[in-house]
Image (cartoon, rainbow, N blue to C red; front, side):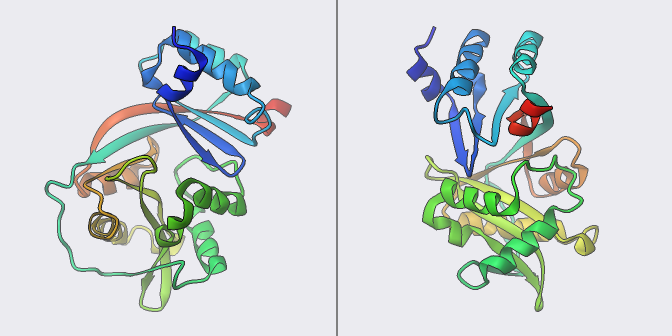
Length: 248
């Protein structure tokens, strides 16, 4: 059995604004995950968080899910993780103009991001827009300014794409969020925009591969992953414990 310190080191903590997400739980045994969960819930720095999320890989037995339910976690979504090694990354000419927070205002970016999330097939966030923006800044540090990009078609912003290097790595590219505003969906723009995001990850951010994830219910995003060369690597369940669930 790992010590408490070893348990915390075995998984990945992603700290946002008033939220924590625990990833890479496959590094723990069932007994260790129970111990870690109970420890985090009682930890003075975490016990009053608005949202505590655990990504549970499919290798854990049913009794782990029952333990999470007993500790006031609820199954929020099921995610498919994907990977692209960039070995055959397609070089394409940019179709859209990407502008980061160096070129657009904070409020403009936030308003387009909020519109891009409307009607999303991913499970909704428990955080409001201001909390999500502060979470991006907290997780990525000063580089979040280059990560937060609006995509323009002519003079009109049509969506959001947020490429970055995963903290703690040197070459793992991720796209923090990707989405089109409602009126620009279903027009074959998503694949091209995502390809531009991957090209940006590779050329500007220095990523040599990319990891992505989306809800199992988000068929359009899964098609984007397929058409841009990603392969499914893992299926995980998302369990959340929030102030709302504690009151319900």
